[in-house]
Image (cartoon, rainbow, N blue to C red):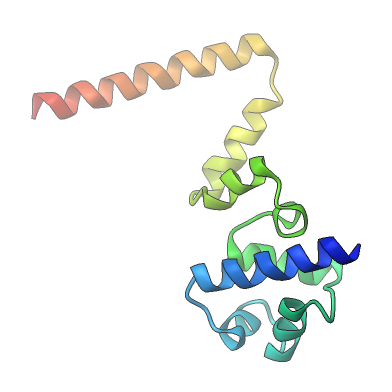
Amino acid sequence: MAAATEKKFAQRLRELRRQKGLSQSELGKLAELHYTHIGRFERGTSRPGSDTLKRLADVLDVTSDYLLEGAETDAAKARFEDRELLRQFQAVEQLPEEDKEVIKKLLDAFLTKKQLQALAR
């Protein structure tokens, strides 16, 4: 990691940990790391390996890319709470445009039905 990337990684890690209301010790336990490693990562004096990065990302409900790069699109993924639904949407993105249109219409029809049911109550 370049120095600027390490600094931003450290900031993002600290920010996400705090947003989750976790102490360094709690994050360490959840990610199966000693809390001193978390402190080193947050100070930018150490960097995680790929396995450690993945564990941190999983605990913090973000992608490894978001932790490293903080990309705008990954920021939205970071806030997406239903991981299975996110995975499904990502799979849909890979489909041909024609199939995507069918799924959009099905989703619109379902949401419209739910809205009408809510109004009828």
